Image (cartoon, rainbow, N blue to C red):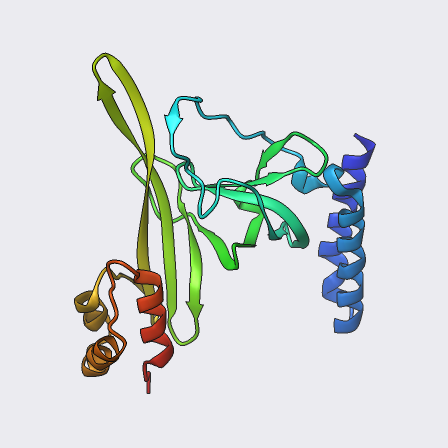
Length: 235
């Protein structure tokens, strides 16, 4: 309990003092705070909370983005950067899960304290305004491209019921949705036609890029969309 009070005390100091400190002092102070939490390891606040609820062992496939195993990344939690965090993203429950070092705990990150995370090389953020079918409060999106426009991938997993004779099984099926944010508006993008609808002025240019590079938006949506956006003229 004393440790938790100490952590909250340091967080409070970080919040109230940094506004009054010069820029260099702020950086030094934040660096010292980060080193403190990194040193405390599994005792840090980020590793305190609700443990992940386990799925039934007979569920087929897995609901985790990219890799079911934990991968190292960065988490900005409650204004503090945690480097070298073991984490994975549950697409079904839309939960970021971190693994406490040297501890068998899989801890859920509360979204009200999650600023962002870097997982598998992508920046992950939580968007509470999206209402999903399972009545959760929002979804996570990964930012793939962030310049004059933004490209998001919204990874989700669904449970599908499978019946064989009298045996009932369930398996996870992954679905990725893509969105482009242009001038503050979010547009779903699925193929060449929807991309041209979002950028009517560059319609011809998009067609030329797609033809030249033989893009396949169905088989390789990420590579195709990124290539177009990186070569598109927004002037």
